[in-house]
Amino acid sequence: MEITKVQAIYFSGTGTTRKLCAAVAGGTGLAVEEWDCTPQRAKAPFQPDAHTLTVLAVPSFGGRVPAPVARRLEQLQGCGPAVLLSVYGSRASEDTLVELHDLAVKAGYRPIAAAEFVAQHSMAPQMAAGRPNESDLAQAGELGKQALALAKRLAEGAAVQLELPGNRPYREFGGVPFHPKASKKCVECGRCADQCPVGAIPAQNPRKTEDKACITCMRCVAVCPVKARSLGKIAEMAVPAKLRKVCDSNRANQIWLGHPET
Image (tube, rainbow, N blue to C red; front, side, top):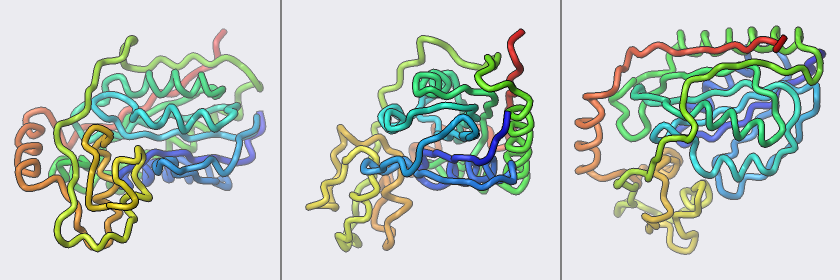
């Protein structure tokens, strides 16, 4: 089938998922349209067609797809082939890919390839520091090239077999007990409230964080222009200490390519 463009759709709190999504899309050599679906107010700027290759990229939160992603995908009338990316902080991706696969199919997409990429941990940047590195991004670009070649070989609407790791039902994940707070450096510019995926920061009082709503995506920390937001000293010591036992900063990326069902 003919593929004429790529649409890169990503949920990215601190930017590493966006970077890998862009690398996969760029590897195709085709024109790329991007949608950062992270902010709560994010509205889809496009719709795919049968000749679009879509790259769907999410971070793994406790081995799951971030909850807001399902609501964002409801804006799309998916069709055509899709590449799925799970980006995780060197602990484990667990059920993220199978959940993203199910969400993509529900939205109307046809997953043909997938990958788990390691990136610097958003809550403990000591873990997998500097990743994705040049080698990771090169691997992502090669995935884009391979996925495009696979999509071109497929007949339009052809069924694809893509075996992925993970379990159904998905693992339970109730979030983490730490949430970013604003310090005295906060100038109340409101950027954090504007960018929050779940509305956990009131626009009228951006110094506040609604802990029950917060998913600790670290978006507010990443976008703050005066670095006024953080998890606090206790969490910044406790989280790396716990993760050091289960994270492997040298963990290899994993890629799966589908094949037509016979």
